[in-house]
Amino acid sequence: MTEHKHWSEWLAERVIEEKKEPYVITGGMTTSGPVHFGTLCEFLFPASVKRALEARGKKVSFYFVADILDAFDSVPLAMEEYKSQLEPHLGKPLCDVPDPTGKSKSFGDHYLDEAKVLMKKFGIECTIVRINEYYQQGKFDEWARFYLKHEADAKKIVEETSGKEEKKDWSPLMPICQNCGKIATTRVLSHDGENYEYVCDRDVKYTKGCGFKGKAKIADHRYKITWRLHWPAWKQIFHSSIEGAGMDHHTKGGSEDTCKEITTKLMKAEYHIPFKYGFILFQGKKYSKSKGIGMGISDMVMLIPPEVIKYMLVKPDLEENVDINPTAENMLKTMEDFQKAAELYTKDMEALNRHERKMAIAYGLSTDKLRWKVPFIDVLLYYQIYKDWKETARLTGDPEGVEYLKPYIGEWIARDFMPDDYRFKYQAGKIEASELAKRFVASLKDDMDALAVHNAVFDFAKANGTDPKAMFGELYQAILGKERGPRMGKLIIAIGISRLKKDMGS
Ligand SMILES: [Zn+2]
Image (cartoon, rainbow, N blue to C red):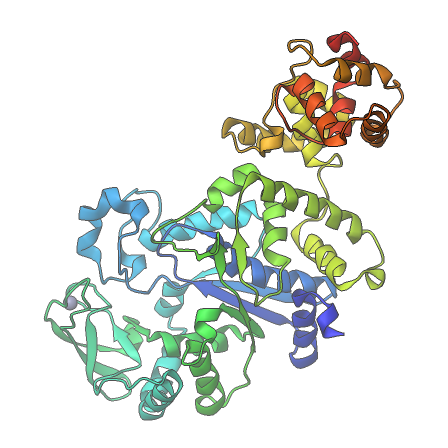
């Protein structure tokens, strides 16, 4: 039953059914700006397919292509301070632009290195390929020659699948200018299948060609194949079994259509299994790397553990847009959901309903082990009352879990990233409690649990002819000095019934 399964399951099963082992998963991106949630998905989704295949005992590798031979076309906001230094390099391949921070091999590597740090944090293993190296080693040469040989047919397929007429001087190749080093401004004038002549005279708005006219040959490896043809070529080079891409590639006229036609009609090769995934939204809006709206991934990893972020991203249906709305309330819900999923994961999968199964599978894709037992929200509650980690560890009975969650909760407090109900100071004894509140606390028995306390509020209100809501309000006032707070039963148990009695003079 496909609709009952998580997407990682049906994709893995399709790979096993249609492709030969060892399987190869490919993926990739142009690292031209800071990492964001979309970047994370580019490797998280393929890594999930890999994990699903491995869980079925299959041999599988995952190649992640860093497409850094692409042209450097804009200075990202994050590099604004280096603008004057970077601008002269616009139009050059990203791997040939110096990294102004001096940390990485090139500008393209700067953001690739940033992505690598993120992958490590998220425990994603793959073989990273700097595509410029593959070009330099001549791995694309046979495909460059192939496209030159079938130039007219390739152009026809590109035009038909994109729905756009290409210019007369269209070429499968983008030469790198020998004079100025730019790749964005060149065009091929003529070729004999191996040797080609080019001129660097295009105006691409963000930069202009230098006017140089030169000759080169494929064997020099000073070119890149144009995107719509480069993509199908890499799938052949890696022998890709499966590769996913975002919706933008999968729309009508997108590069996915071209890739399929080129592979099956022109190369007459077997097509890999394509899959598409939705957009990452931020509070309902499309995530934008240039504008950098909303909370970044580097912020979020400080607030919740990476396995929970992974869970949040892999749980929805693959083609569904994931809307990230990181309010404290939503993050708490996600933490609770994750913990519930951990519990479901230990159960018989076949006995779970569709939603539960999705949760359990997403959990299995996110981590090997739950690092804490006590609910996150309880740790938050105990810490808010005692302001002491040792005491929190002792009272919750999960010292290891508390230790693991401590840096995250510390960050919640430091940023005041707190749900309103948890923003409080224990006040009992400092505030004059109402008679009713005092009498209620006095009526509690020392061995009651959270639920019993909660029920006792209702019983007490009823017995005294008071509205339960008003009763809760009086208690919150007496204990926290505000109208609302965490759940009363949990709150009173966390404080301790005898301590509360003493503090309130009940
Ligand atoms: Zn030039």
